[in-house]
Image (cartoon, rainbow, N blue to C red; front, side, top):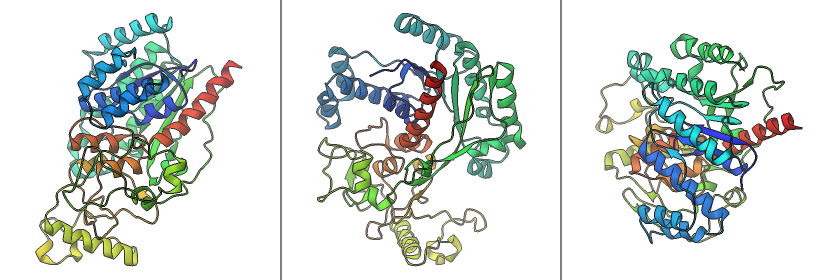
Length: 424
């Protein structure tokens, strides 16, 4: 069900921010995402919502259960009268901006009878702003061309003239290139007629009922002539723990499980899973396959889990027996093995999970493995019926880069209130 408010979705990723705005019934002029797997994920999710809205969700469930491949699913959905999702799988650049703008304008004119949008949402890729990335890559991160992808976002602001916009990124943007990126975003917005607070607003997913300590800078800007102010977000604690998220999933040893459908464990799901509608009724769960780990790493995992569960202290790499150490660097990144806190909230899930699982170790010592795709998705508050496309590494990246849907929904609610107040 669509609202009167129209959104242009940029740097969409796998759709975490998008999902929050869909839940508040915003309509979309289009979605722009350069990475093919993330673009496919977004298309799949948009088809899910369209099928749900038209009472044809069993088509999606058939795909989820593996009864048809993705090409069949997309075609069957279109044959059932579902409009093909407007996902533009292109990189934003000087050479592509004009064609993308024309594509969005065509959609606006033919489908909505207008040339502008109410809201633009998105956040340019943040690896070059992250403190971890800058710590590891030094000058390479400093000179990374992705530092300036926000220029394209601001160009689209100028063209489509939204009343409001959301610009999401990591807190490291504030200090990136000695603070010049942050001040440049504000200055450029001012020059094209938009107001941004000069003090950064950092929001935490914890305060949006997400079981994750995840901070993000959330710019909310508006036309300079409008009498808006940055919204107050009420702090809502999750009322659940990591183990509340994970305990109904099949227990796996390294290498066990499958990306395909498998049944939940017997027993009732936690109150948190039920209240947040994260566990679904398709009859099982997908994306729950554990990585293979060598025995040396699993031994380190057990040591780290035992130390954390016993004393709530993190393992320092230099505390390990020499036979377990394989890294020459003994001075930096000594916390490279980190257990997710089962009895509380998780530390922030990052895209680095695609490279190895050492920083995201399951809290159960009997399993001694890293998080599966589904476990990471649940920590980020994605429901179990959310399918991620592409190989496992791509799924981890999409999840690690996403705005948690529960957080996105809370942001969308406030944007809706701001737009409604203007229309009164």
